[in-house]
Length: 466
Image (spheres, rainbow, N blue to C red):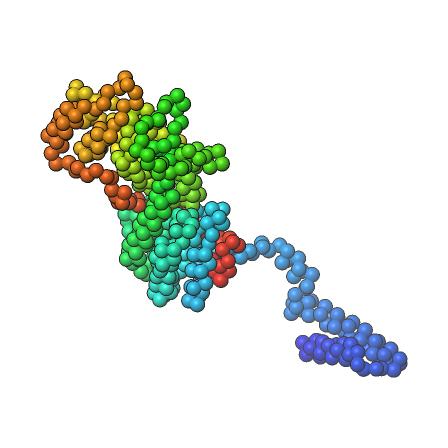
């Protein structure tokens, strides 16, 4: 054994010395060194052979062959936990990148992706039990929704409001689905149940986000109603789509409240412009993955707003109160009803929202004699007594063949309606600011958190998926 070691060390020392380029040897010395090097190599070889025969050293050839026979051991990929690891100092950057996402980019990604990413960050703070990081994330998100989205951005870009309405609701649903509450976990897979939050109860944060969603939704509705308001008169009252009906009547000399119905914008009629605007709203809601129960609720308010503006204008415009105008109005309203059906917005409250102006158009077409009083009362059950009487008093016959509404009929129907509707409201104008309760049903997700990936469009390389 000592002999082997001395040969090996001598060989190593010699080989090191001969390989040093800085040493300049004489030709004879080089020749002697080469011979000595060759002898040492042979001695080392012989020493190795003896050690192998004695069983003190494994044959290198056999070692290679035996290793080839062993099964290959590969490192198994870890199953992702469905969370993103990050540092406390990364929180402002995470929020900035997520909340700065543009709607035109968001529609190309998984609907609700920012909410999934944020929730997976929340899961990490729950996993490491870091309450400060959790609060910074949640409060930072809520502050942005309140001060930026609701107060500023929706007024300039309604798509931003729709984008963050969708994501805020998805975040609320995720917080419920992974809360561990049995009521919200019924549709979870075993893996989803294992991924439930363990350290913190976030029910108060859920309520904060729900309130934010309501505020965003109301801001969106306000913006939508402002955008459709000019079409209430132009598309519903003034648009004349049925040819052959003359609507010329004596007027008070008052000019039209809108020139939109007489002037076509790039050849598009007012009703078509309105339908295109509604379609734009609906398309944005679908592209951003807003909960399916929400679009009908939004359009109920939009339809109500159109109805209120149209009816209030009709009640002030005597030149609109005649038979043929009633037909035109009803025809225009049928386009709105058909549009809702085409978009599969199956909610009876949509048609109900238009009922007052529908009934007003029908009253303009109806017979107006004492024999018709009960029929008029039933047909106009969504109109107040004052609204019915106002329309009857302003009604103008189209030609000599049509009689004026008699004072006797107005007196009789006033008494009839007063007796029939003792406790009903008697307002003249519809309340344009009528509010509607919003419902946000729980919508669990089937998307696996461990499958969520962050695209390059959202620059969050500091997040590490674990």
